[in-house]
Length: 402
Image (cartoon, rainbow, N blue to C red; front, side):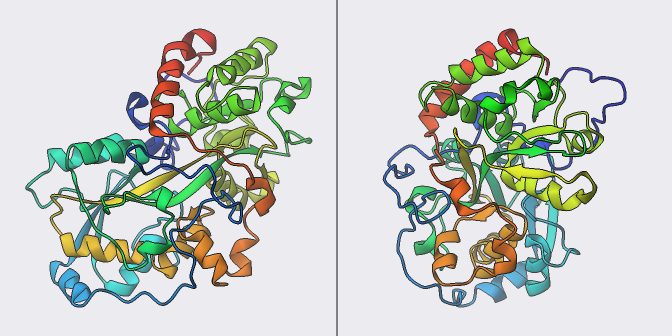
């Protein structure tokens, strides 16, 4: 990472570094190869058109017999790469968060380590700490990394009680891994600095945005920065098989002076150093709540809508396998899924929860209208691999500065 301008804050990395995947192996979050692809013909009833495997009303989650007792006997669970500010994961002491509510319900010690780790570092920890009591029990990784991990047999298959309500396009058929939440690239604007928020990618060319357009780091290593380039490509005549128009547009933004090479960390957004931030919607929406004084405006671009999700999985070498299973049951229960929504991330069971009338109006109104999510596209792992190779090869010479 290059040295930043004097006075620009670059130390508040808590919610960011876990997205800095190792090279292109973990870039973005994608539909998955091997017959588990996002359905191009999926229903548009949900914000992202994700089709649940079965359409039925949700019912209270009943735990498998003996699971809670067995998990409490183990007494602990090892978590990794879960920043407190990311998708409302929180901590054991934070009521209303994913980890906080899990602990409150079961009083199982949550050993949360490496909050800034990348997806690749999570699976590396499984291998490094194999056979010890400090290895991760569960991981939360990009789909691309999940596919690689399956090849190495790092995951233990498991199907939660609400399995049928996880879209078929967001899970491995045998239970190796399963999507937990998803996000979409969005525009966030500090309107204390920028009075007229951009609505589309084409808007970013306006002279009034000189030196104000930023993403979250180098798209060759940062997942949501890569997703921003993909979103741009889709809006500028590219496709899921052609990311080059996105790179060319950012090159154009650099040439006209609108591109800002500083990372759009929260402090930089608030200070006005990077007043237009192009990142996941759940991050921008959380900043809107956290920093009311800047009148932060968040919207999904009118074209080039691109999304991605993360995946849960249980380590094949989990020191606390029953606690890991209980964690997954909680994550995919109504309570766990709605906890993600409190953090502005769409939970995997969003469709089923909405159909059953289980999404409180107070939570639904926190998100942009469903119409803004219409037409969101997802890339396959193969498409991401191809696109990331193009980005890694060309970013520094065409745009650079990060």
